[in-house]
Image 1: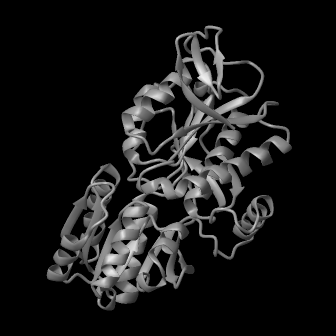
Image 2 (image 1 turned 180 degrees about the horizontal axis):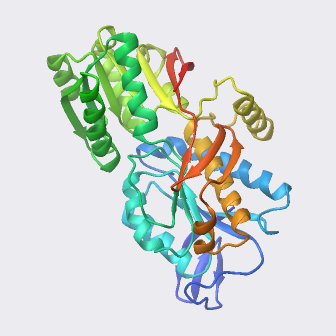
Length: 378
């Protein structure tokens, strides 16, 4: 793994070494390591995901390298802090690509970061975006490994209506593109099943106090709260929600709720909390159990908690390797031309690439204390 320091007057500084030879824009190394910019959050509300993301990506790279690498080249990472402001992340990714340091980009980071990064990549290298997201990304160089509202939110809201009679919702989300657009999709899905969204509340990323939000929820009295909060923000909200006694009368559902957030919230604040995802560590399938065993064997019992967010970074590296191998080239145009229909078995089970999105199974789980109890496969 290579850490980027800063640009130098004599070239790009990589891991303390200055790359002094000029590299022409767009030229790719024909041999040597295949370097991937791994963009993961190391700060901010999503920073709690960073350690799991890095280790899962490391595991994928080690497995690919042990099997002979990609097109005979071993994978190495250049880590970029995806928790920095979007324009800062985009500048760094642009610099790495322009200098010929990286052959691809992947990782878990917010949609606001993705939207800043995509124009700067400008179809020069393949970009596998691993998180669940709001849908609608059409840039030709981007491949999407995560869940979308259509496969995650729509069936879950239908399940809540049929199984629990929950049709009247409120939305609490961070104020950026993923929560805003997902809330629009939720309104559309609920209208089809006789449901509705009443109160809609968006807060700044990094919000720590939810007193006013809780007061508005008490006044609105919804049957369910759709949580579209990231990392530490969701932890703080869960604690405030429980302290106000709202979990006695109201369920919570989040398409972004992982083991880190559950542990941070505490067992007293997770009653009536549900999540949907393509992977949970407690998912009892051959693929997921095998992945969990490999992760803990490699990194030990005290490794960062395994979760859907970290696993998505494993997925991103694995998908890149499959794309390169199928195309027989690191050229983004050849990759794009050969990508449709690519299929393989992953920790999420059988997956297939359709229209640059990875089709996958999605599961609904309820939090039981500090663990997910997987209830249903959509």
